[in-house]
Image (cartoon, rainbow, N blue to C red; front, side, top):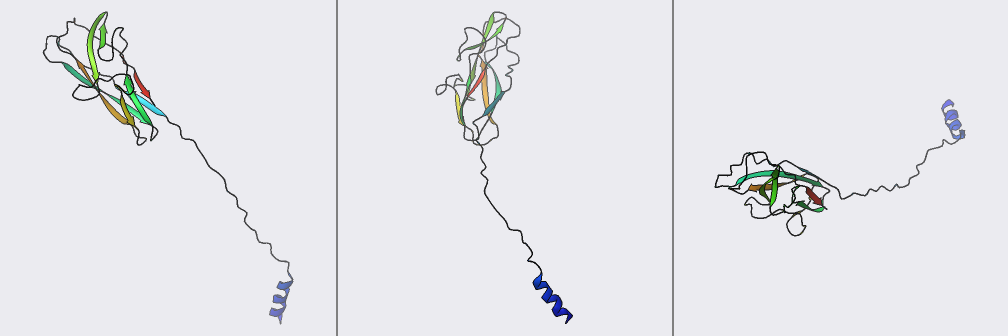
Length: 160
């Protein structure tokens, strides 16, 4: 009888309140920008012998990192020497110029200039990893120049 009284008493207790769930949604968004970074190593020709019958060659590397899917062009200007052009650049030692050229191919036949669609290097970034480009430099043989250190600064322009 005691069991039945306890069971009967449970029926008379107030109903226990159960928690219920309410839901909604939250929008999440972001805008990914077309962004690029560019770095370049220096081109060091080393020693140049003006009496040699062969040109002096060197290379440099340009690294470009862009948002995936970003189309870009890499251009190289004429350098900082007045009178130089993108096809005949010049290093200086005082007022004495030493001519050199920059190319986009290892055969050193395709000039690397600064006009998109004409003489720049075009690419589309496929990943966020850097894309490397080799710049091929050449000092023509047998230039009439004196001994000394010759320098120039070329500006790398990344258009995207």
